[in-house]
Length: 48
Image 1 (tube, rainbow, N blue to C red):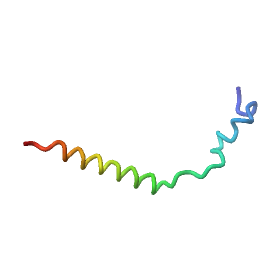
Image 2 (cartoon, helix red, strand yellow; image 1 turned 90 degrees about the vertical axis):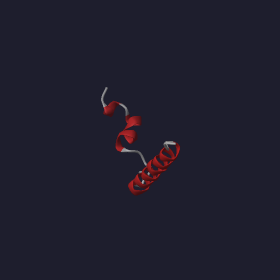
Image 3 (spheres, one colour; image 1 turned 60 degrees about the horizontal axis):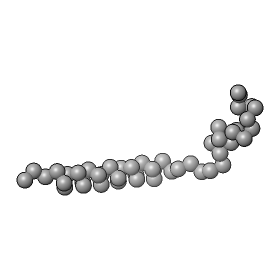
Image 4 (tube, helix red, strand yellow; image 1 turned 60 degrees about the vertical axis):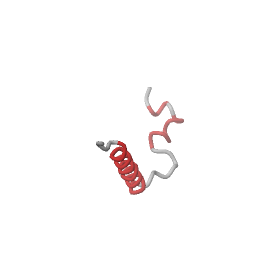
């Protein structure tokens, strides 16, 4: 089956009509979440 026989899948192959995610927002959110996980991990991993 080629993509020409399935016109319903053409928008999916071209990326659709939606706006893509902002890469700065995505990277900033990932950095924040990783730093938060690092902070929580170091708080619970103290040697007594």
